[in-house]
Structures are given as structure tokens and as C-alpha cells.
Amino acid sequence: MQRIAFLLKVKADRLEEYKRRHKEVWPEMLQALRDTGWHNYSLFLREDGLLIGYCETPNFKKAVSGMQKKKINALWQAEMKEFFEELDAGAADTSMKPLEEVFHLD
Amino acid sequence: MQRIAFLLKVKADRLEEYKRRHKEVWPEMLQALRDTGWHNYSLFLREDGLLIGYCETPNFKKAVSGMQKKKINALWQAEMKEFFEELDAGAADTSMKPLEEVFHLD
Image 1 (cartoon, rainbow over the protein chains, first blue to last red):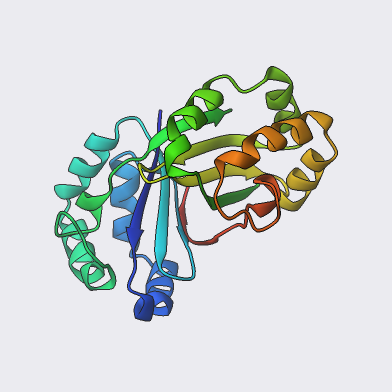
Image 2: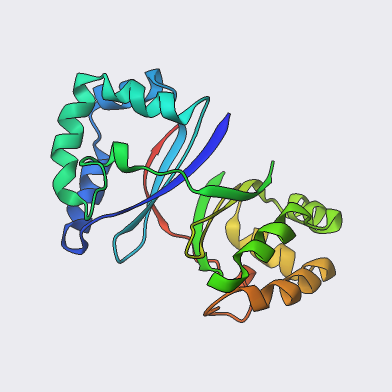
């Protein structure tokens, strides 16, 4: 299992709406994440909009590419796009660059 | 179990040494972490020194205060202190402020 952390930036004036939307993620979107290998997936938000993602997955590249094939993800990412600053790859999911893990204790 | 994420900042000119030190954390320090409830604990480092911590613990306040009572932790934190920028509470461990978790999928 790979442990993945990534960072994104939510626009400072959209934080409350971003949080609200993530309390009611569409059930089909949650199922698509499960089906493509996203486990123990959390998002943490700093007050200035810095977003920290953490997940565990057999293969992060496959988890991302698996979601790319899901129609529900295209709909979700289209709605989420406007919440983010500076997306390298156009959408949040393809802009998630894994950071280097420098320590781990089980 | 609480899921905790926190951010710290490693000095940009100390990254390689910080990484090296974390490949050889003292066994007594690892045992102290286990004994005080630090589970699935990872540190991720961005190229500019931003450090992301993630751990799971029954009670984060107790995990931090438990480590405060360990002599080995005082020695470790004393050696680590110089690697960090802007520590609010003097040492890295007491400067770990949990971020708000806004989404979770098991």
C-alpha cells in the first residue's frame, strides 16, 4: 500500500462553501473513489486555504487514472475546479503531486 | 481513533540532513512514540521545506503530552529544533497544531 500526501490551494473566499460541499460528496463519487482504490482518504484545510490530502492506495497513478475514466468524476471535478487556485493540470485530481515521505512509523 | 495532520517548516538549507536523520531515528524514540499512541505516523517533505505530518492516535493531546514526559524525546527535540523555522512553542512536537479535517472516506 502506498501512502500519499499532496497539497492544493483552495481560494480564500471559497473555504466555507468548499467545506460544505465536502460534507455532502455525492454517493456515486464516494463509490467511484472506493472502486478505484482510494482508501483512508482525508482532506485537511488550513485557515488560509492550503489543502492537505492524505490517502492510502495500492497504486496512486492507477487510482488517479481510474477516476479519470469515471463520468461522475468529470462532473465533480468540473464543479470543484472553480474552488482552487493555480491548478497545474486543469483539474484538482490530476494536479495532485505526491510529496516525498521521509519518515514512517506503523 | 483521531486522524491528525499538521504542518511545520524545515529550513531550506537543512533538508538533506533532516531526511538523513529521519532514516535513522533512534529505536528508543520510535518505541516512545509507539508507547504514547502514535500510529501510522508519516512525515512528508515538500522541496521548499514544508513538512506535512499525518498520524492516527486515540487522543492527540495525550500523545503529545505523553512524549513530553519521555527523556528520549527531550534529547530528540533538542537536536531537531535547529532544523525548523518559526516554532511557535519552542520545539517541533509542541508546535504541531492539528488542521481541520474537512473530508474522510474509509
